[in-house]
Image (cartoon, rainbow, N blue to C red; front, top):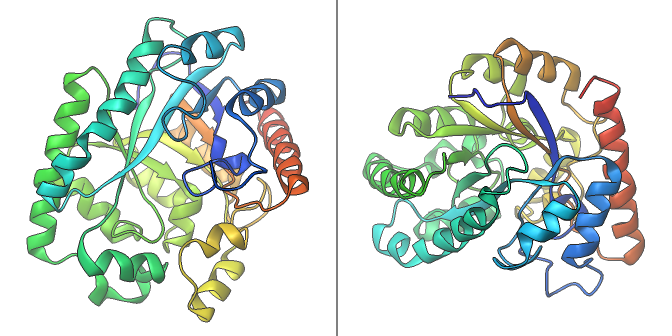
Length: 314
């Protein structure tokens, strides 16, 4: 499943600059989409993740914007309520809008195909418990999906996977802090219930209580996309200790630059080589900036992250 043309291709993401659903249109310091595209190109990345649909450009605009900067589209992140089939049906237009953007750039052959990068929105009061208590997958087993919810989740996942594949895209599932699929055993359960590929997000996997290097090797035949980030686990533990919600991981900058934090990046890259991984490697350093200075620092950090990987042959 993890064979693409062209080896590992390094991309970046708007969230690394503080541009995502909880800041765009809310924080006046968020750069516009063109500024992000220019920064990503100048830093030497070969592609970019989409961010919220429309942020980088409309269906009619985005292809030209990417082509003039020689940037491919790595994918787009979307949370859906798989375990609630009624809510899922109502949310499918969001998926279709994302795939419409993918369609608009596919013929340009700017890099490997973009990956629909799916995460779990959760259902019911339990979803709020998870969002308000990041790390619960390891720390509070009673908060997990029950058998009935997992069964519903599997049905919903099958619907979404089929919809993506029918339109010509291979979806991947993204482990995400503060959701029902953050801990290693929860990711394993998801993989058992679906034949979807895995987007290994190294930073979220660390926060979720797992060793990304070990599990890249364990799940090598399922890994079809990679989000490369590291995590400051002491900082995360302080968030847990203070009882803060998931948003605090961005406010408190739990994801530092590559080379800092808990991820052994060299060992992680070696594990990817061992499984012959090829395709997008999306560098992410999710932040929640509040000043123009912090946005400028984010751009500098992404240049440093790119240089870090170039030193390692990527």
